[in-house]
Structures are given as structure tokens and as C-alpha cells.
Length: 345
Length: 289
Image (cartoon, rainbow over all chains, first blue to last red):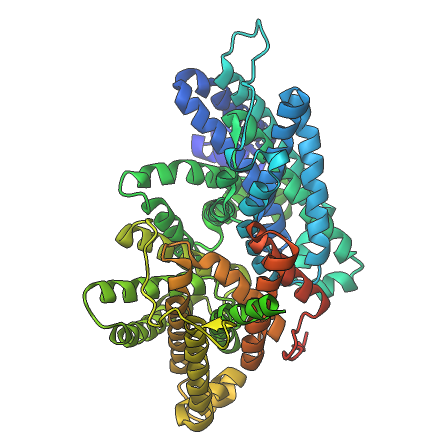
């Protein structure tokens, strides 16, 4: 008895295989394809496009930080631009005053923004919902003034110019492409760390605290510790992104860290999907490219587009692009998971 | 001593403005439990409307009244069209929609009126009174605020609509069963908040000058005032706003540089929320879980 091709394919799917490969192999193939694309892209793009893509990845890291706090833990922050600035200025001051090489400034920048986040997270335990949003908004508004005031350290209004990063000799990459790969590695690392953090025990604890803090506490989750650590971890991601931005742009100044920076992270997060990891990349693309497109219309247009995007996404797609696609993708992969096939027998 | 009193009185004048905006925030919070982050930008936009009318040749007070009417209707429209869909949504959606509104008003003002800083006429002459303790301009700002408060109080205390609005805010279900159009009351609440905000904007514009970003600092102080007074209490908002105005002036004069003004607002907000989250006059919210 011969089976048709379709029937054979159906057998394959039931056995958790597709076109002769297991679903795990397909996942590795997809990941490999994505990495190959990311590696090949800078060689096909112009120098400026490479810079833009680098900024996309930096914004993605920052938005990922915000997603951990706001999306998974439900603590709304409108002030992540402040922690972005903390990372950026740590790097700038270390490089310019103490001559520290750029790569060595990343751990201190991460540490500084982590500690600041924890310090901010402690009083934040007492603020719920809109109050935390309010406090963080106040912080975001105050940041530029603060940076201008302590001008012995921050260079005041003039800001700080950074030494241009030299790529290691003999590697054959220019400045922009080298930094692209540095940021790419850190982005992949950040997403991996976030996935491990959020898809396990601690992630479930964070979500439980978000959805029902009292029930979470009753189940024995130390809510205060988790919330503070979520704050610190989140600001650490964003602070590292700030440090990378300082290195890539080569310049920091108070006006670059206005309240609107924090709000653009919020837009990126809402557009990509607040409770997702992949959404951060969509958010980064949105932050980097949409204002440029809108800028052709008028100076004011980028912010109007941000505002409209916020309203539209909250009405039509509150889970964001990736968050809305996720159930659909899960349904697709569930159909070909061996575990489910076994259940059906 | 004389200088100290001078600072206190000029603090009261800016405090009156913060009190108005704080009152607008409290109105919206009481009826819809939303913290309206766009309140400052709405007020800024109203002020631009007044500025356009004055520039078109209207007398100041006529422009003032027309602006208030337009703001009232605009506030109602915003509640109906934009805020209504997220009134019962999670906090995140509500916050994002308010921030979206903030950005839209800010960029709309920048688009229509450009980002150049504009002069705004003051209806009051600038003469020293009370032995040079304050100026007539400060006095005028305080007087306008007080009149507005008195009118609001009378509205809520003596009119049927005012009573219905209080009922709708306190217990929407029962109010609806009594035949009160709760949705309409919420819209009127937003309209009134926009009107109060417009007054605050017009009063503060001669001092701060008019530009699309002028209200961000004022909004922070208004938040501080509203929280200090207790975000559920209108009386508290006024008292809190005045206290914040005076504190801001005294701290700016005697303690630290004025360049750190916004940091003072941030510190005030954090201190109030940590030490006395219900404010001076607010009631603790007890939730059933």
C-alpha cells in the first residue's frame, strides 16, 4: 500500500518532524539564518546605514530593559531615559577623564545603572500603578537640569566629546562595522540573559507579582526582593544601552537625554509588545526609523507620529506587534510538537 | 525679613497656578481614577488659543472667556473620543494613552505655532503694592484663582449637575440606577478640568513666556501639590499647590540654585509619596481583594 506525499508529510508532522527535520533542528536553522543575516547585513549597507542599524540594536537593548520592568513586572517607568543617561555618562567620564578603553567602561556602566535602579526601586515599592509612572516622569524631566548643574563632571551644556573607537588592527573592519558587531554580540547576549531570566522560575514570579501581588506574596514569593531586583536588572540593560550609544555616537550632552527619550522607549515598548523579548527589536526599528520618515513632513511630526502610534496600538493592538503574533506562532508550533502528538494518541 | 515675606508672597502667586492645575488633576482622578499626564500640555494648547485670539485683536478678557469655552468643549470631546476606550483598561494602557495625548498636543502646538518663545500679555499692571511685598500682577493671579475656586465650589454645592457629578464620581453604579448619565458627567469633569487648566496656563504664561514645552515644570509642581494635598481632595489640591509654590520659592532663594528647580519637584513628590502617600487631606483607599 503506498501513501500519498501529503499523508507522509502528515505522518512526519505527527512525529514532530517537518520535511524530515525535527522541530528543534528547524529552530536552530531559523536562529542560524537570523545570525547569518545580521552578520551579512553590514557588508551590504553603506556606512551611515550601518550606524543606523547599530542604533536600532542599542534602542532594542534599552527597550528590552523597559520590557522586563514594565511588561513582565508591571512597574510602569516613564523615566528610563535617565538610566540610559547614567550609563552614557559613566562611560563618557571614564573614557575622557581616566582614559579607560571603551570596552572596559561597560561593566562599570552596568554596575552604576544597576545600583541606581535598585536605589530607585526601593522607594518605588511603595508606589503603585500611575504613581510610579508619575515619579519616573518627574525624574525624566529633571535629568537634563541635573546633568547641566554638575558641570565639573558632566561638562555642563557642552557635554563631553569621546575619543573615536579604533577597531583592532588586522581584523579588516572599519570603525562603524566593528561597533556594529560589538553591539550585535551584546544584543544577542542581552536577549539570551533576558530569556533565561523571564522564561523560568524568576520570570513566573515577576509575572505573578504583576498580575496579583497579594496572591503572589501569599504563595511565598518575596515580592519586595523581586520587584527591586527587576528594577535593577531593567535599568542595567538600559544603562548598558546608554553606554553603547555614547561610544557609538562619540558624544554626550544633557539635551540628548530629555524626557522625550524616555517617552520614545515607552513607544518602542508599546509598539513591539511590552511583555515580549522579540518586541524590543521591533521597538528599536520603530524608534530609529519612524521619526526619520516623519521628519520629512515637519519638525513636529515625529512626536505626533509617536503620540498617534501610542493611541492606535493601545486601542487596536494592546499587546504590540510581537505580542499579537505570539499566540499564532505558538499554535503553529504546537501542531508539530512531539509531546502534543503523543497526547493526542 | 522683608525679602523673606516677598518670597512667600510671590510663592503664593505661583502656588495659585500650581493649585489650579492640581485641582484639574484631582477632578479627573476623582471621576475616572486616571492620572492625566496630558493636563499640562492641554493647558499649554489652550493658552495658545488665547494668544491667537489676543493677537487677532480681541480684548484680553473676551479672549479669556472664549478660550475657557473652547477648552471646556475640547476637554469633553477628548474624554468621549480618546479616553473612554481605556477608562476600564489596565493602568498601562491608560498611562500610555495620556502620554500619547501629551505628545500629540505638544507637537501640534509646535506645528501650528512653531517652537519660538512668544510674549504673552498680562491683564494686570505690574505695580508693587502692600509696601512692596507683592505686585498687582501676583495679586491678580491669586484673585482669579480664588474666584474660580469659589465658582467651582458653588457649582458642586448648589447645582443639580454638580450634585450629579459628585454622585457619579463616588458611586457610578448607584448613580446610574438613580438615572444620572454617568458617562456625560465624566465628560463634564474632563471639560471642567480642561477649563481650569486653561486658566492656569493663561495666568502663568506672562511669567514663563509661551512655548510648547512651558508646562512640563508646572505640571510637576502641580503633581507635587496634588499629592501633598491628597489626590482625592480638591481642598487639598489647593492647599498643596500653595504650599508647593511657597516651598519652591524659598528653597530656590535660600537653599539651592534655581537651576535645580525640577529636582526639587522630584524630591518633593518622592518625599510625599514615601512619608504620607495619602497626602494631608486625602482618604486612604481600601480595596477589596
